[in-house]
Length: 350
Ligand SMILES: [Zn+2]
Image 1 (cartoon, rainbow, N blue to C red):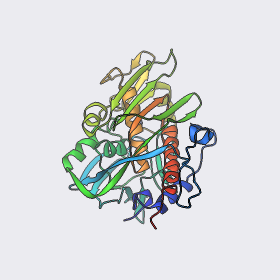
Image 2: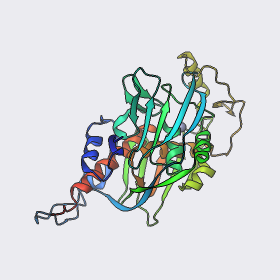
Image 3: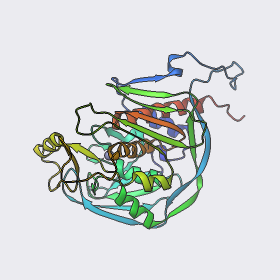
């Protein structure tokens, strides 16, 4: 199956398909020096006219793609709908990408996990359009991306996956049990030579250059001095091992007032304080934190899931300040535009 950016990732046409079909969020600012046009190093183009490098991204290398060795299932209650949901992870061929397949619809609908499929970022990331949607995909995507599993078909019989405990741990456990296999196709690793920053309403998310060939992520959580969720920061160098050990079990969280609003909307039925980390005025209600900075760690988990929709690996230092799904997706789209630009300016073979 060839879908979205998950098709041939070296193919320029698939990039163009991805980036130009996405809606833009006009209220988001993007600060990158190439857009300001202040530093545009000259570069000889194939026409000999000195075409200019306009992107700040560069390909740093490749790694071999991975899939799972056998199919594996996770069952649980949909965090929004309260329905019993079954998710089945299946091995997929090289360059297939991650694709959700809604098996409960009259005609099974594939929903590629790619940026052009993002249809919602309010509180959660939603993919697909019309009835063929799947919401709150970020914790599943984080489990796959955290373990560097690039190709996977995910059958799901509802519009939102099992919430489990609000973390990625249950999915990581299942995927580890399935086993991981190297595949012959390569996945590109990109980095930046200058910071790329997206901003909205006092929140920022940036990818900074780094001399190390790795991806590091920092999150600064600051909801105000009187918020029940305390100011905190977490930094993590991301590898499959560190994701599984330090981030996968960190749960999503919600304020008591937000939980009450969800209940008023008829969502989250059947959930108790043991199932969802709810912050009251003095801290978690009927629950305990796994780490003092568990909320900041969870925000990095969300970043890993959302940015996996790029379909490429990143190296550098991600720094989020009060950022969430909207800025995660906007940074992904900004980097993808830069990648297309970079590929467009590479000399073509005669
Ligand atoms: Zn989350």
